[in-house]
Amino acid sequence: MQCERCNERPATVHLTEITNGQKQETHLCEVCAKEIQLQGFGLLPQMNLHNFLAGLLNYEFNGSKFGQQEAGVKACAKCGVAESQFVKKGLLGCGDCYPCFEEKLQPLLRRIHGNTRHTGKVPERTGGNARLLKEIENMKRKLTEAVSREEFELAAELRDTVRQLEKRLEEGGEA
Amino acid sequence: MSIKDKVGSARSLWMDADGPDADIVVSSRVRVARNLTAIPFPHLLDLEKSREVTAKIRKAIENTEASELIGNLELTELGELTPLERQLLVDKHLISPDLLNDFQAKAVAIRQDEAVSVMVNEEDHLRIQCLLSGLQLKEAWEIVNKVDDGLEKTLDYAFSEKLGYLTSCPTNVGTGMRASVMLHLTGLKITNQIGGVFHAIGKLGLTVRGLYGEGTEAASDLFQISNQITLGQSEEELVNNLTSITRQILTQERASRKSLYIDRREFIEDRVYRAYGILKNARILTLEEAMRLFSDLRLGIGLKIILGIHDKLLNVLMVEASPAFLMKMAGRELSSHQMDVYRADLIRNEFEKAEK
Ligand SMILES: [Zn+2]
Ligand SMILES: [Zn+2]
Image 1 (tube, chains in turn orange, purple):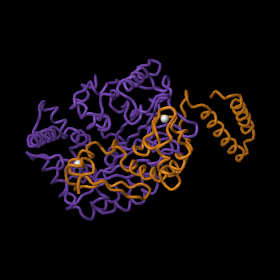
Image 2 (tube, helix red, strand yellow):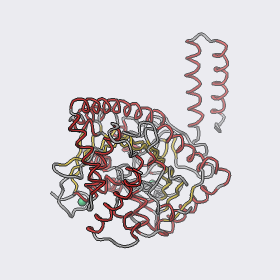
Image 3 (cartoon, helix red, strand yellow):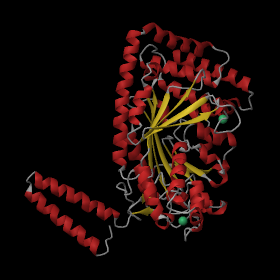
Image 4 (cartoon, helix red, strand yellow):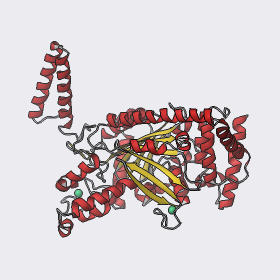
């Protein structure tokens, strides 16, 4: 068997990756294995994820739901990347590709992450309402906690804060 | 000190081996992916457009109002470096091998202590990374978070309220965060428990990586665990999850080392002292052999069988023993045999120095 990284030397070592209970092996020669080890795996292109993605992409984009021909037609209005390019490379072209291919990305994201909604950090400049929404959610949680601890004074304060934040959101919401 | 000077020294902060549990957790790494709005992702950019992205990021890094958050980062285009210097940055784990492809379009900014590096025009416009010794994922995330805040003072990131930070590859969308630990798990490997341990964590949204092989020296006791999911969990949740899993593995590794040392003391001591003896005396050492011996010696240091040598020396030697570094030190091209001789000399000298 040839090394899957350099396609030059015989493979004698295997890189095992286990994700979600799925084991995947990449067969490597001594030289490539040594390099990967030296580089501390960490910055390896996510071989497993890319392969995993390629499989999913073929299924979601070319599978029974969508004809292969149709897959090649649609392209992002902003950057021009076509569905077929995305399926081949696993890379989108720009931020606008996400809304553009949303319909098909949605099930894909669910399969990769088990989720389709971001709950982490929100940037200050381009976060839009996300920051505000997150803060409202946060305050509501604190409010419920305060009520359950029977700290009614605090709860009243929190309720006011939530109302103010919600008003800000309605008014167009600068965070 | 410029990046050119930095590559001349093998030392980076993560190698100091002074972090918590650094005898088993070699390093903790956190990186986030970011892209600029209204600019296509790097794989669609020609050289000119890539350089415009680099210029934007340079400006953000040099913004004095953000310098407190960002720290002292120095940006260098990869094209300004020699091939050897570029390889050395890879060997020191400061840039990814991917950054070497099409390198003219790429750049890297590295902090003075080398704990932080920012890669420009890799798969995404920005990859902010922090690498620390031992189990310090939370600390690494806090540092990355700050640098990210600093850069965002002037950069507009591609972000969606629903999907979070938008990345070239949908496997990174959301937090854009990949956190990982590098673990040295000799005990679990010798006692054949490693498969079971990994089988269990493989189900928790994490990825485990290791090298295996029959009768080959390239197989090692180093394993990497990283988060696989980037969407739907906050950065803190991802970091806490990986940290607690790592703690569980640490406990198991310590237990297996302890029982090994009780049940098979001569076997372990023999293995450690053999490694020590060869490293101190060999005249020819291949990289594979050196790596395997370092691994055995690391076990001996962890079990306090060997007292005069610190993990830090092994971390530095692991980098210095690489072909690129040996050539840099020798100042000339080396044949593979010359390299093995040079490597053995270097290691022998370093051990002599350490024992004084
Ligand atoms: Zn190979
Ligand atoms: Zn696009």
